[in-house]
Image 1 (cartoon, rainbow, N blue to C red):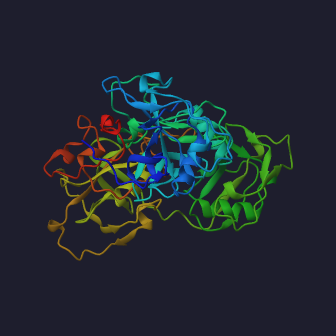
Image 2: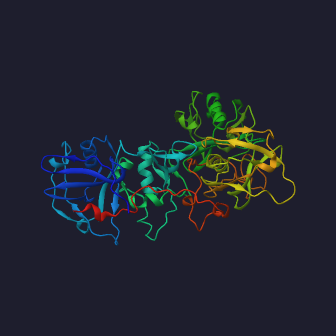
Image 3: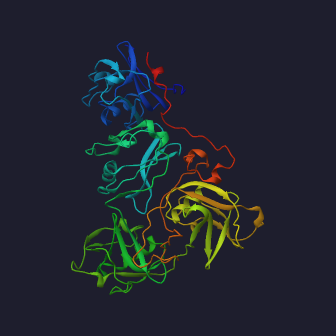
Length: 511
């Protein structure tokens, strides 16, 4: 049973009071009111951001960030609730609003209870994380205590969030791995009507918070997302320039690629600066659309996404004039792969040094390093980091020891690495990784080979960028026990994790 959290109540001389329960902080939780000699919870039928803002102001808790509801389950006892609360917007307290009669939760049309996250509480932000632009990534609920809940965001709800970010509409939503027996519609953590201007105006189902920390198979992609890649060259920093807009890869006309824009693309690809922009489809012709909108970069932007855009020079451009680009440096990122696991996104980490696959050893391997590996391999987010059994075939040399990562790096090479063999190999375990999924494999035409060409993985290898992961200790709550990797089930109790409202005993709140 969850005990009542400490609260700061707003109370007047008439015995009326207002407080938030069960949120772990006095500025977030279920809304409890005392009115006309009775106390109970607040029906969620008319609950919205404006009413929640009034509650937060009255409690000196800042602004209202989110207006979730707690959905009453059939097995729970009916609760006393205050119904029919209507405010004009200029009130300084809830008691100045029109307040309806008392009833039970079964009298509420939504059969739900109002809740709120105020800005002075634990909720920090909602964000898309781990994408190659601000308009794509995994939907995350970030708490003040550095707790990150990764939740699915269906396409309709994702469109609200995309518009809020200035990224257009959603082309692709995401679906989280939620556990439970409810129908798909009931398993939505966030539910929007489609007319909201802000994701915080939507309803958050608090019942699912403890179940939504499972990685999603897909990421949210907004129509404003764009990124660049180079394909068909002799190394990863040269080739046909392809630009992705939303979900579609296309080319740009050679006349629309100037030096400042080329430098931004090379920098985005971690390839130094632009050396040349070969014309006449030098690296081959593309197969997608030829974008007629041109980029007008200043040259100091970090991403192509940040550059101004406008009409191109030649609206009738075709693939015979596709732009190419050669940057100053070959990619320094060494190829990675995962071996001896249950899929190509799970197993013992190996790194390619001068064409030789070598072991990665680390006596302090954790989720931060695993997050980087999963991102580089386009395998989603890290669900586990473990000591892998040493390879049982042949002699595999040691290529890397002691990778110290922050967790936000794009490639393992960006971590603090020790290449020297200062510790006897026998005393160090192999680094093992369990990633959330296979990611979106995109292979340019003609390159579906079993070798790594232009950073495009074969059916056995998988390399590039996606995702991010927090710094939690590896424990069984990260995975469904039925799906857990065998290495994560061998000994160790791990830490349990609980956040949210799933085990609320609501009957205590009624008088």
